[in-house]
Image 1 (cartoon, rainbow, N blue to C red):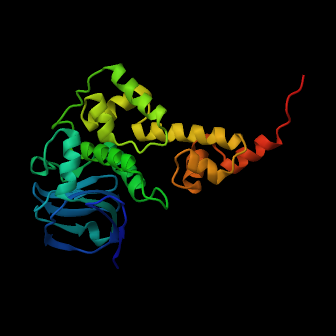
Image 2 (image 1 turned 45 degrees about the horizontal axis):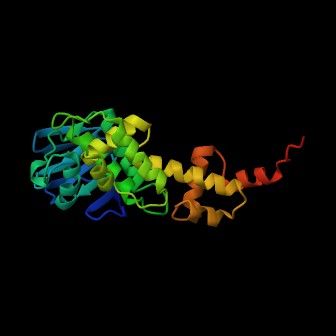
Image 3 (image 1 turned 90 degrees about the vertical axis):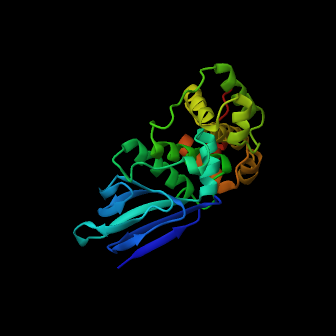
Length: 276
């Protein structure tokens, strides 16, 4: 019995599909680039690099037009998640990685036993598919796709080469600090820093411990906390600190502080003022 599901990603040109099946896929091709992760079980398949075998934790890739098939090992169901990226989306991401257009991008490893690549895929899946009822922000989506694609292309094609200029990152932090409610994009930040998008992502994370999106979320959560402890209604605090809605603020707040905004506000209201 086959069980397949398509998931909304909120990103144009990006399809997400998950499956659990013992189905034997015949030889076929895709128009898109494919990046996936085997969650359980395993399969053997023909690929552009010959016969390969993938098991749990392996990242799998396929190029447009590449003939491949898929047979479950021992006939048992295997489970996997898969992203399909259109060539136009790869053009956009590739520009951020300085690898040019989709015609210059090629996956050389149909199966990768690479824990880091698996982690970046898992993070991308969580952000784009399993992150909550609201789609991710454009900044979060771009960050995760850049990181995921870089991990699958490998270090062979391009090194980091990020210039170590702290003043560039200080400017970017100031841009975010001065406009916490702003709709910041990685492209705008990269232009300000004079770096590629991926160089900006790496340099910012190296200097601050956060990606630009994570830093923006941190600053918004800090602002929300000040408003909440100041007695503002939770919905108003969410809107005033740049969150899409109150539930989004609650998830970020609880992750950061370990309790809900309502609990924090109740505790603050119950506190006894110190008197001399």
